[in-house]
Length: 333
Image 1 (spheres, rainbow, N blue to C red):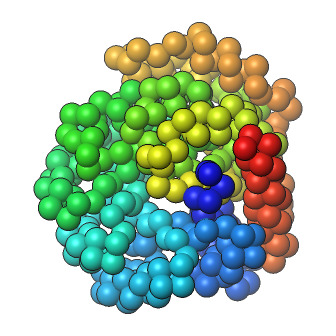
Image 2: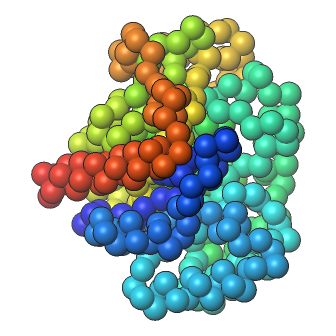
């Protein structure tokens, strides 16, 4: 049952975990203990969080000890790494493997300002970032193989499904896989359905994310929303996921960032960096426009909510989202 594999993702709380800095962000931030409590209160199986954001190099052993304590309490943990740092991974991967954590999420480092929405044309560093990413993956491959571990690459609004598939198949399908963020598929010339069809044999971890899509001056805007209230057809997606359930390690509830992601698909410049890929531009644009609202949609943060009120709202959004996902899964089962 998929419902038995669902965790609560740290990134559902982009504002209340302190990832957005502003003058009113001076309340008690959500930490790992509160994340664990929220997961337990909502009857989820555990948490997913960025290990290297919370435990720096000098604190790795403390992090491992805390993970051990969670495992002893039968709390499932899925570990993310925000930065692909070889020295850090060389130190931590054997220690994770020793306590039974043999799969974790990574993403491509950006050698400059990070972009979202698949807007490669605004990035002068994308080609070098991709080249560097492939070099690091090949470098960590022996480390993964010797420790019996798997690194799953997230579609982080920068790589198309066909690129992720090719990168992994060029190195190793035994030690690399995909961390599928469902909502992020919209951002790089895919739909959730096309992403799944391209990569289903490689998906190991899933971020259950939804977006409301609205038309914008340069294309479309992807805005945070409660799960089930946006453009993702979860009945369809969970039906597909049940087909690959044996290979899934976990899934996590992850609401989108409080800052909307605009995809500049109306601009010809947007499409030029994708010219070497076999993308059905017509089908993609027709699909996302059909799913989009004519009026601009804003997140609570973009609508002016701040401080404790926004923290409360983020927590309420997660609770509503979990209830909605549970309802969908019960109906499917």
